[in-house]
Structures are given as C-alpha cells and as structure tokens.
Length: 497
Image 1 (spheres, helix red, strand yellow):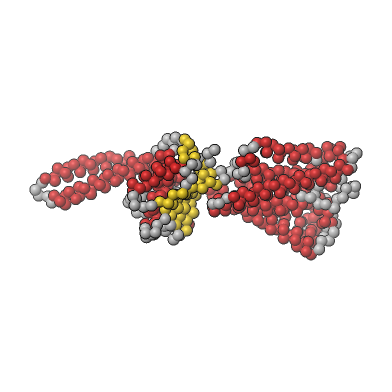
Image 2 (image 1 turned 180 degrees about the horizontal axis):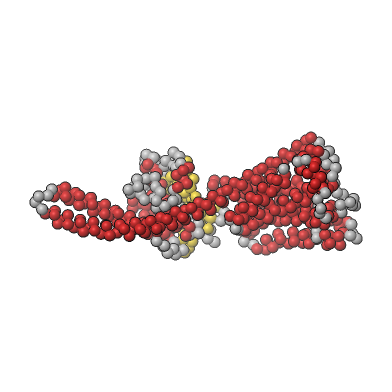
C-alpha cells in the first residue's frame, strides 16, 4: 500500500511537470522521485533483513509471498545502499529548493549564494556514499561510520526543519484568501511527504553496505521493525503513513487538476476567440456597406421631411431613432474592431496613484454621482501601459456598478478599488456587493460575446478585453463571487522592484 501511494505521488508530479514546465514543477517531481527511491530502497532492505512481524508485512507488502519475492530480488548491497542514499539525501535538498523558491524573504530569494550553499552538502554526501568511496573511508577507520552517519542525520534534519519553517512562515504571511487557499495545497503536500519521509529517513546507507556488520549501533533506522511491535506503535505507524500518503496525494492531485484546468481553459478560450475574430471580421465587412447605405436612406428621408403629405413629427421621430441606432451600431463596430485588432502596449513604470486617477476620471464620466471606495498604495510602482490598464479597470468598475444596480442596492452600494502586496504580485482588486454570480457564470464570463445582460447593448467583449489587457501586462486575473452577496476581481501583476 505504501509503495502504491508513493507511486501515485510520483505520477501526479510527473503530470505537473508535463503540463507546467517550470523550476517549481521540476523540484516537485524530484521530491516525489527521491521519496520513492528512499522508500523502495528501505523496503527492499527490510525484506532482505527479515524477522518482521506479520502486521508489518501486511502493511508494507500486502502478503508474506510478496515480501519473499522482494527478499530474493536480485540486487547488490552496493546498489541497494546507494538507492537509499539517493532518496535520503535528495529529498531534503529538493524540499529546501522548493522552500527557497516560494519564500518572499528578500535576503534568501535574491541571493544566489544561498542556492549554491544548499547544493554543496548533498553533492558532497552523494560522493561520500558512493560504495567504493564509503568503503575506502570506513574500511580502516570504523569510527568514521558513526561520524558520517551522525553528521548526515544532523544536517538533513536542519534542512527539513528549515524548509518546513519557511513554508509555514510563507503561508501565514499571505493575506489574500484565494492566494492562501492555492498555496495551502502545496504546503499540505510538502509537509505530508516530509512526514512520510521522516518515518524512514533514519536508515543510513552504511547499514546496507555493512549488512552483516554490527560494529556500529544499527538500532537506528528500521531496527525497530525487527521485533514484534506493540499494538500502539503499529497503529501509529499505519495511521501516520496512511494520513501522510493520502494528504500528499490529494493535495498534489488537486494542485495538478487546477493546473490542467487552467491550461485547458486557456486553450479553449484562445480557440473561441480565434473563431470570434474570424466572425467579427466577417461581420464588420458585411455590415459596413449596409450601414453606409442606410445613411443614404436617412438623407432621402430627410428630403421627404418637407413633403406636405407626410406627418413631419412622426417622420422626424423615425429619423432621429434610426440615426441614433445607426450611430450606436457604428460605435459598437468600432469598439469590437478595437477589441479584435492587435493593440500596441507600451509598458513603463507607473504608480498605482496615476492608474487609479485615470480610471476614476473615466468612471465618473458615466457615473458622476457614484462614490468608489479607493484604498491603494499610491507609491507602489508597477510596469503598465496606463491608458490600456486603466481601461481594463474602468470596465471592471462599470461591471461592479451595474451589478449593484441590478441587485437593487444603489442606496447602499459598495464599489471598491483596492490594492494588495502578495508574494510575487502587486494585486488590484475591484469589489462590489451586487448580485454575484453562479458557478456556471463564473466559468463563462471571460468568453468572447458572452453576456448576462441585455445583448442589444452589451456584446460580452468587456471582460475578455480586460483579460487580454492583463495578459499583455504579463499578469493574470482571478474572480471570486457568491451569489446574492457580490464579486471580487483580482488582477495580479508581477512586482516591480
């Protein structure tokens, strides 16, 4: 059971690496593989050592027959010992690299010497534990066995404690709920895998190399499995192992699922917009001549205005209505074209104060009497095209106010523009207390031409336009909403140092 759950962890991490090729995915995959190597090596060693209770046999191997097959598996002591060494030494290394990757402490994150220093000890110990090197060192000086084992144990423990402390500190440093929720999956997965690793990491590779030697106190490691365990210790072993495996697998599975869904939605969205782009081009081309012709008709109707046989007031009413409609359609066509065509984005350092001012000026042109609660760190600088980015925020504020109106809460409406500093991102949040969205609506809101409003006046390009602008700024957008309570849109921009 233990080896099966560990294999599932490896498969999930490999899947993440295939979906998202990044340093984070590489370290996570290395962490899972090293855990598998350690547990595999230890399980082979336990099977060959023998003398374990039926309960432990059932937990580790399912049956005595499987344990015997593993026991007689053809592998040398040198191969088995180095298998344990690889998993035992690399796991804390990959865990530490992941912790350094996630930490936002400037002294650690921006210092390449830290990463180099973290690599030195594992590299040295992997050389020391090479079978011929280890036998050369300990062959004439048996006391070196204990010295190497003790030093290795102390340093690996320091790696584990430091890495877990950095992860926990980072988790509690996050203030935004959805960022903390996503990071919690990583923390739970890594701590669960670390707990599983700690159950078996006391097994020193030197014990495997000197399989029949008793010059060193081999009671450390899996020595406690050589006797019949008490009921309490057996239950503890099983419970801790199962909990760690299940938590690790569930967390990494959910994290993998989120990555796959995010990439899949991205691909689907791009395909839909490609289709929309073609359709929009055809629409503009076919409608343009018709609208121009309608303007000629308007002029002819105007010429009939002075005719004595016509109802001049009615005719003028029709003319004004058609003129207004024609202008609205032309405006929508231009707007659609501006969404579809490739815009030039000029990204320069700009303060949040400038962006907020530009956004609110546009917003108050449409809603001069609506108060927007603004709480942004005015001195924070981001890389952005002020005009385009303000346009994106303006669209979000307009949607927020429309949601408040639709919910009938104009009297106590709350539309807010907020900023946050979270890990690698400067986050801008647009929040409202409108009618919120259903789960189905949240999945569709960024699709081109999707709108829950009156389709005659809202073509459903606003949020897709916002998303494209955010992407062009190397950022991402997230939404949280509760039906009947309101919504929050989060724009995550890379921090500008």
